[in-house]
Length: 89
Image 1 (cartoon, helix red, strand yellow):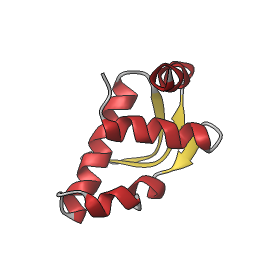
Image 2 (cartoon, one colour):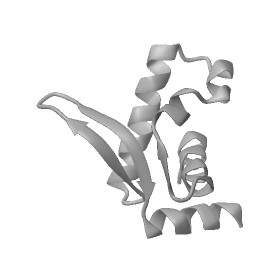
Image 3 (cartoon, one colour):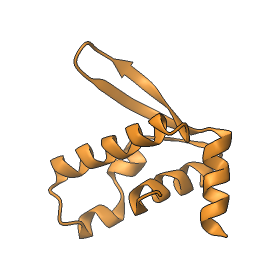
Image 4 (tube, one colour):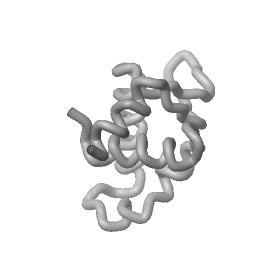
């Protein structure tokens, strides 16, 4: 089961041709209505993207250091596209 944020991430990627930049999620208009602080919202988005990657629904591109992963771009996998279409139905 996917959260609303994960569904939003998948929908945005599909709407933009299967891939999109990370800043699109960070500048989400719904974030202003969220109870989370701005810095916490970025952590929540990062965690949601990482969970989509773990499930095999998305691929993340970016930089990886010893301590941290910086995701700059997200691309859908075929399983991710199927998940979006199943969610719509």
